[in-house]
Image (tube, rainbow, N blue to C red; front, side, top):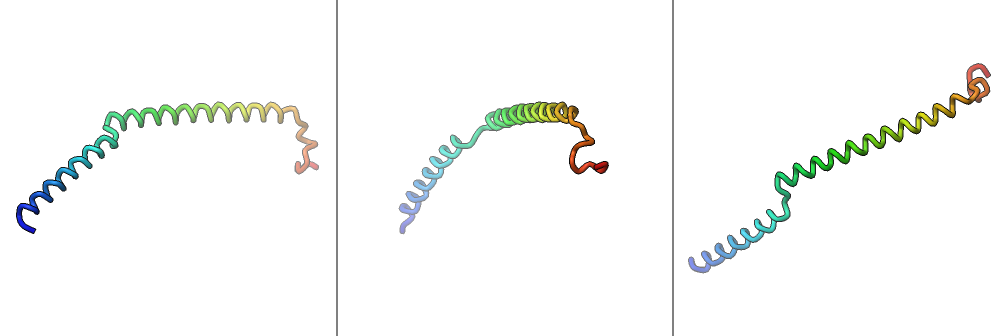
Length: 81
């Protein structure tokens, strides 16, 4: 392989690398995009936590309301049985 052929191959490789870098940069999110995604995730996470807390509070409230009407003395397994 002579010097000219090597230069042509290097030139083609450099062009291929440049094309691949363009494609890669199009696929990679920018810093603004990353920040926006992080903010969206944080907002969604906060929303999920609020819903979970509300649902748990409602669940325990319903459970406590039902339990307050029970006669604890008649429950099986009580030490006084």
